[in-house]
Length: 284
Length: 302
Image 1 (spheres, each protein chain N blue to C red):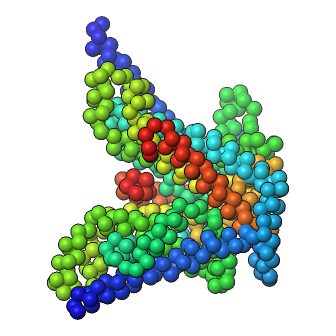
Image 2 (image 1 turned 90 degrees about the vertical axis):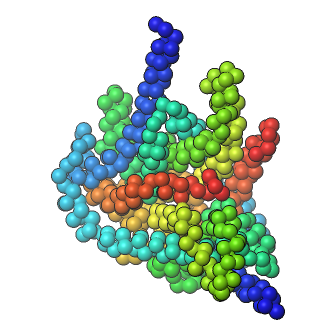
Image 3 (image 1 turned 45 degrees about the horizontal axis):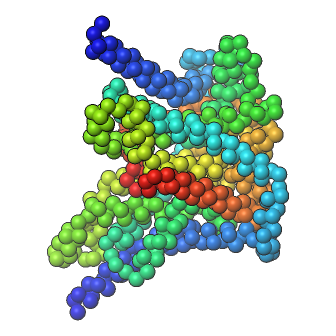
């Protein structure tokens, strides 16, 4: 056998090995989701048999009916939408305004304010937790979305992120041109700058929407009534006492219902999501 | 005159623009940091008088055996999870970056999927996979002739491995994407030069890829300290903490963050809980500074 032919076979072998390893990892990644969907189609009795069901069953509707009978699931879904969208919208507004001011203007205390912001960016969230809880309790925001939305409406990283983007993507000449054309200072941002910011805003939106959609610890402390709960909380509620047994089929149905929309949206725009969620690392 | 007016207009606009951010940031970002430091020096049950106790909360914490248990568990989970996540993520990124893989974006999206899901949802899924009488994993083990494992009971010895697997499963894709982007950023010419000089794949990896990836690895390491030392959702769900079983059997799944929940929100000792929060912050800071030193110390600066 000639040397190139041997090399070609060796390279084919490596190729197969590489793809096999990636394939195996893909299977391991998706197996839990597969089991979730499968169990959502079975009753708890079926799931508790040996061997456990590995293929689809016929009890999806029965499980669905039980989910919506036990908890106000769609209400909880709507709550999650309201909370996450409000947080995202406010963050985009406040962070792009703040980032713009830091990128474009000179003003007294600018350096001090920016240094403060940078200094708190990497702090662990546990440090904020107890004072946050005390503040929202004092404001009588228990069982109110305000407890989640208002404190999360600002992000130090978001301001930093928008400032970096505006500094490197918005030419000062553009702002001067707008001034010469008679655009009031306070409106330049909205008329001229916002259209340029779309990619940065999209990334920031993803960075804020997903964590608030999936957030558990903070809502757990303030939302105690089933009607106001967000999705992660209602899943925890549905699960009940793990040492007394639970209805696995019903629980996995609710879990599937909670995960499916996010996964579908992710798969429709995977590139965008991935770059949004890792943006801090790659560009920041 | 016109210039001066324009200048004032700019300053007014600037302050107007940063005002909403800074007002909220002051109340919910800055004040809590200072206030929890203050609280950590007081004895306070959330209402009534705050009594200044100096370092008593810290002393109580450092004499509390459950604190060391939580610290040990958190460190254990961090170490073993990140032995899977960091080298694993690097390996997967390296494989993806080879010429053998065509659909790189598809694979990235596949491995990234667990990251977009709610930790609560996937923790519940894992708790059924690791079910004791009916779980798929035990059934599989039985098929291999291995005794089924009591994942959450027994002496609690399997609780941490389950948390580690869940955590690694969720985070490997995120680290992979970061490493992959870093590798894509390395100049192709460097590889070609090395190949012309006769370097083999291992030498290229050890002498070019890894050294150039050091800042990226450091970044993922520091972020992993911030995330890993505060791990809450996974142990909370897997040990059934909602119903008071904080930490599960033998408290084998008790972490620093779940202990903070226990102290602050079940026992209601806001002072001690704040002291714990500051202790966790100190641990993260020390680990981060240590790894930055370590990375900057060897050869070139990061």
